[in-house]
Amino acid sequence: MQVLQMQMEVGVDPAEVGRARRWARSRLAGSGIGLDEPLAETLILLISELVTNAVVHTGCPAVLRMFFPGAPGVAGASGVPAVAGPVAGGCGTVRVEVADISARPPRRRCARGDETGGRGLELVDGLADRWGWQQEGSGKRIWCEIDRGPAPARTLPRWNGAFEPQHALTNGA
Figure 1: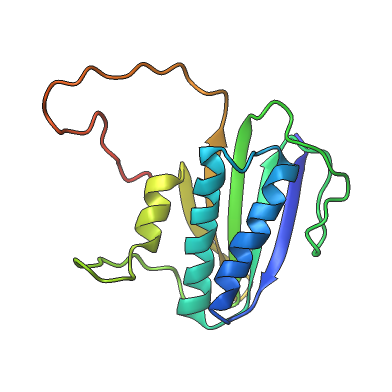
Figure 2: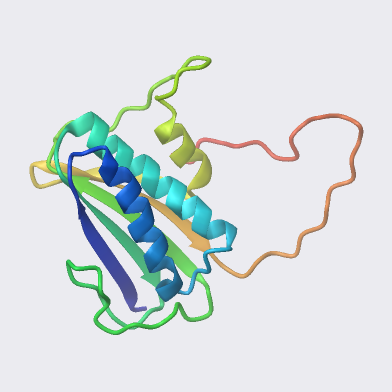
């Protein structure tokens, strides 16, 4: 299967997080993912969290990469695909990676109450189908994946009067 890859360089300025979100959103339409799809917002949130971690916790520049299945072509460093085209059939795995030159591994934090930080990797864990990290040269790459397939037929659960989740989030790491 061919993959459409797009990437952008991210500087160490916190404003780069917003720029990364805008850049990613502008690239989704060419990947076959509509901006009105829930998947688009999930991907933007995952990108925001991973880029924030790179900018805030490493103080090093980073590279954001997005991989979309089934598209003919690979993008260069400018983020422009070699051959543009939508994702065929809307199925496959979408992958997001953020690579930086810091050897410091990502670390989950336990945020308390009203703290405004420390939940990024928890969000990634809850939203992505898989995520992890690996050493890359003298730095590292943190990645997450979302499986995109045909929408399953869903029925609404019958309300039993209790406020209990119908399913539990589990640690997929």
